[in-house]
Image (cartoon, rainbow, N blue to C red; front, side, top):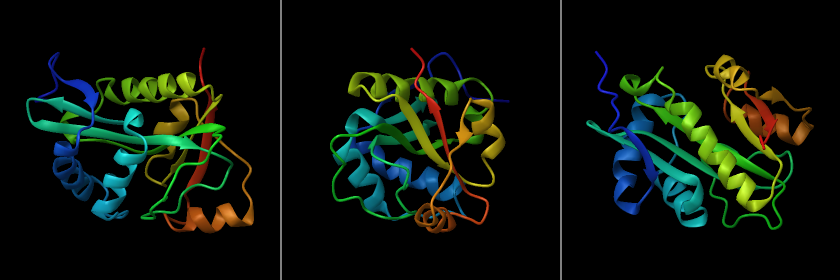
Length: 172
């Protein structure tokens, strides 16, 4: 039985959501741990790209995303310090759903939120680093591998040996 319902909605992330977000990340991303400061910084730098899926269980998902420039992804568990200006893409740092929220379109709604943010900023591309576990999902969402440099290969290795830089055009 799923606890996903019509009352489960994506809401802008607030500082009060950080503890639940970090706790969810710790249960879902056991192979890709990140310090609490990563979540706090992403929210501070790009609140327009940080969302929580709120439902009967509380925080059932989250998305961290932000403006970015170029095809060198932020390494895993690394503070950014600032965002590049101008940006040429919108980077989805993380999209996580609790097991009970999966398979019901919540991820596609989060991707649409990222696209809206990209459109508002006027950037034509969504990008992300996909781990080996998520490749099939992201490709079904229309993301395709980008050609990567040696520098980007080193960043991808901070995730796992099969990680890929994936991108897709922002839909109109």
